[in-house]
Each structure stands twice: as C-alpha cells, then as structure tokens.
Amino acid sequence: TTNTHPNPSTDNPTGPTIRYMQCELQELNLRGNDLGGETVSRLLQPLATSRLEGAARSLMILNLSDNKLGGEKCTRSLASMLQENIRLVQIDLSWNLFKQADAVRLADSLRDNATLLDLNLAVNSVGSEGVIAIATALSDNSNSVSVVALDFSFNRVTGLACARLATMIQKCTDLRSLNVSGNRLGFEGTQTVEQAAANRGAEEFALGSSNCYSEGLVVETLDELSRRRAASFPRQGTEAKER
Image 1: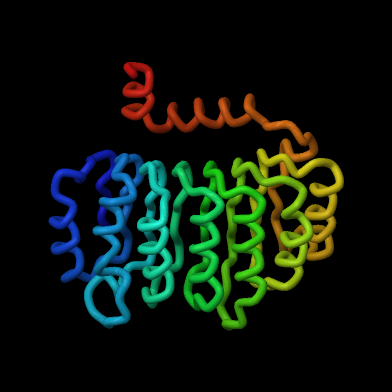
Image 2: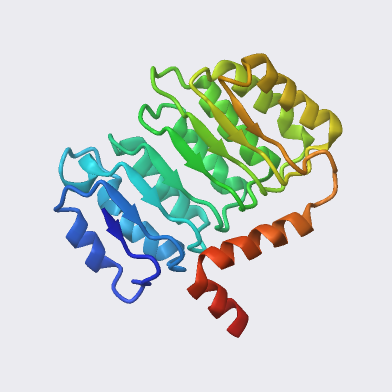
C-alpha cells in the first residue's frame, strides 16, 4: 500500500512512475493532492499496459479523489488503464472536475471491463448524458464479473437519466449499491429509480436517493457535505480558509 495523502508530487511526476512500475503495488492513495490531469496522466502510463508485470499486474485499489482531474488527456489515460489493468477492483474519482464528455470516454472502457467492482464519481459534473453513457455500458457488459457499487451523487443529473438507471439496476444483477443523492431527478424520475431498486429487494440492493425529489439544485446539502469533508481532512480545510 502506498499513501501519499496529502503530499503533492507535481514537481517530479516521472519519479513515482519509475518507482511503482517495478513493484507489486496493490493500493495507491493519492487523495487530496491537487495533482491535475497532466500529472495523473503520466502517473497512469505504466498502469495502462497489458504487460503482466509490476503494478499493472498487482494494483487493486486506486484513490484519485480531490485532484482537480478532468479533460480529454486525463480521461483517456484512465480509460486505457481500466481496459488494460487486470486486477483493479476499486477506483475513487470523486470530488474532481469530470464532465459529460469525460464520462462518455470512461464508459467505453467499462463496456468490456471484467474486474472493476467499485466506481466512485461523486461530486463531479458528468450530468445526465454522462450517467446514461456509463449506465448503458455497464448494462451491455457481458462479463461474469461486473460493478457492485456505483456513486453518482452530486453530479447535476436530471430525470433524463432515470429510465436508463432503472434498466441498469435490473440488468446488472451484481450491482448492490447505487448512490444518486443530491441530483435533480425530480419526483417522477426518483420514483422510477426507487421502484427499480424496490423490485430487486431491500436485502439485495441499497439505493441512496436523498434530496432528489426537487428539480432545483441542492446547494445547501452539497455545502454541508463539503463542510463534513473538510472536517475529516483538517489540512485541506485550513488551506481553504486561508485562501
């Protein structure tokens, strides 16, 4: 396990690459380093390979939360890694800058993925089309192993995505948890998703859908979430106040 939080490494992005491509790394936590897409693209290069060696063979858990990630280069690197890495089961991409186009690129890599079990995209801006793309890709995934937990909370999703989410809940029988809280699903959209979850049964499927009935942006709830996150991350909270 390697935990670099909160220790930014933007000065020498090729250094970490050289080190971990030679090791049997299983978990890499880069949360809260403000690395940016360019640096993370370089860090991911040795993981986006089909060669059965080093971290490309061993990495199982990757946390890239809160690193100002987004854009074509970064998401293409992530997509390549998801396609080629043979062991990755959990990736945290929450609290970044991913938008609709980024989610669409990631969706293409999820269509044939046979290892990823947990995808966290909370607090981004992938929107309805981004969620639809990912939900469609997962619904079309025919591998024996598919995603078990998804987090789309606070992503500016509207009721347009609800029918596709409901279809995914029914088709992805391995899926056990879906969080869509803090989105603008509206009354009918929320009911559509909740009904699909109810059809799976409470013991088999957990749905997070708080603050979704309103079609207005849930600003106060997100502010509260930000405050709780800052409290659990003292250094970042202090820096934010100083700025």
